Image (cartoon, rainbow over all chains, first blue to last red; front, side, top):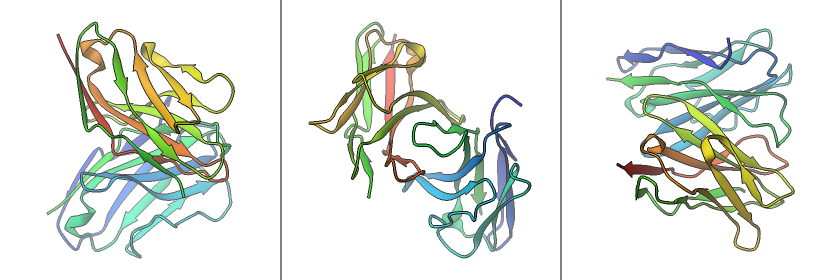
Length: 115
Length: 113
């Protein structure tokens, strides 16, 4: 596709359930990022993948959060035992390499609501 | 550490008037600066960036921004605002030695007809 795609667009789940969020980056982009956008915290960096290198997980808020990227393309963000404070919009972005001047292109996001 | 401040939560202007959205930053080295816009229920759209060179950068939809190193600012401007410019605007900074963006809290722009 022409842009970054994310699915689902909306997800409503019950507290304690696990959820998986998917990101399909722009073809040819080697870098992939996950961010979280919430009312209280603004836009926060979560995790970063570059090629086959080990991901930078420094932004993950707890060990309930994990992410993987298969084949250097599609990424899945998994949240286990969801809590109400996990409710947010999860944004995925990709860029052509990680040089500072490469802008990141964002997907439409997944709005997660934990009841 | 890098950080961005957008001092105004909201900016209201009349259509046809100039629009300015303020941004100041803090970074250890020479900054890479970006502006993004977010429309309701949409992801962030890239507007423009400053990497090096001319302090005035031009971007999409008639927007421009001026990098001021002494004031550590990167204000977004548009000479004549449109109602369709109403959206949430984010300033972001990236340290050249890092890869993640640090975002400001965002500024909601409302352009009234």
